[in-house]
Amino acid sequence: MKYLKLYEQFRIILEELDDEELVKPSKQILLDGTSSSGKSAALKGLSNDWCVLAVDSFYNLLNEEAGNAEFGNKDKSKLSEVYPGCPYKITPGTDDFELAARWFMAQEAKFGKISKLGLKDKNGTFGRSEKCKSVIYDDVQGTILEMATKSGLSKPKWILVHAPIDHLILNIERRKGTDGRDPKGVFVGAYCFKYEAKSEKGGVDPEKSWTKSSVKEVLKGDWVDEFLTKVGIKEDGKEYWMYTKSQPEGKYDIIVNTRNSSGEQMSIDEVSSEVKKNF
Image 1 (cartoon, one colour):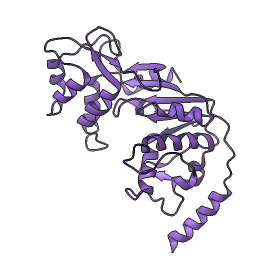
Image 2 (cartoon, rainbow, N blue to C red; image 1 turned 30 degrees about the vertical axis):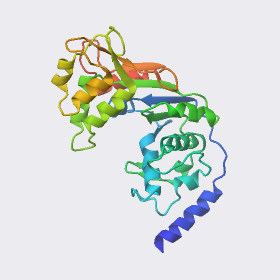
Image 3 (cartoon, one colour; image 1 turned 120 degrees about the vertical axis):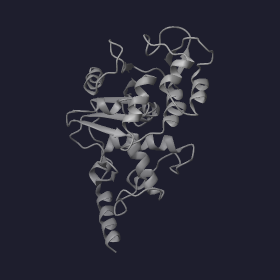
Image 4 (tube, rainbow, N blue to C red; image 1 turned 90 degrees about the vertical axis):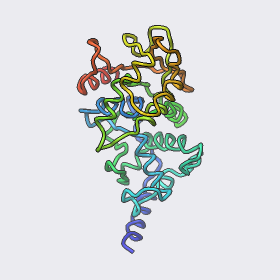
């Protein structure tokens, strides 16, 4: 009964929310990168006129709506009720699910209803409030670029944070026990989606080449051979450099490599400073 009454209250609030758009964002940034690449470092110390819309938060709300998670929103409105009319299937596991999450991201950037209703996921409440003049989309692909423009917003600037292989595995290991990531999923999945090895010097980390043996020195597991094959490191003893793959949405506007001029991994503050130069 308690939840029913609360839900009815939120339905009333939802009905009172009109479809008046917020002022269009003065800046939009798509902050892209594999899981554990260091994107979160770039979000440190943002002023309160920035809003961060993370795709994981929209996955969470959609999974909660499907009954696969619980974040305490049962007394509030479902995401599909907050923004009705999504042209994509919102069922987890369908081909449309990824598109749906980005469609909802674009709606929140325009209208800010999630923020007004106080919907939350495991990290707390989120969304774009009226005071947020600029928006950062925290994502792992470029789909939001098209969703934003289709929704009447300008095209976000696309910034890729690149963590080289040796940095990426260190970042994953540091997160063990807190917000751990499966190394195989990150490397065989996300990394190979974004990058490919070529035998010509250059790419996103031009001062560092890789061979089969050097990769195996830093990566351990029965999945490493699969990663080597998929990323394109195929010949023994041959040097390879990492390049970005072509993406359906076009080219990245900015690529920030987390290897510094000394060949070491940038600190959190260095990554933050380097990325924010391009905001």
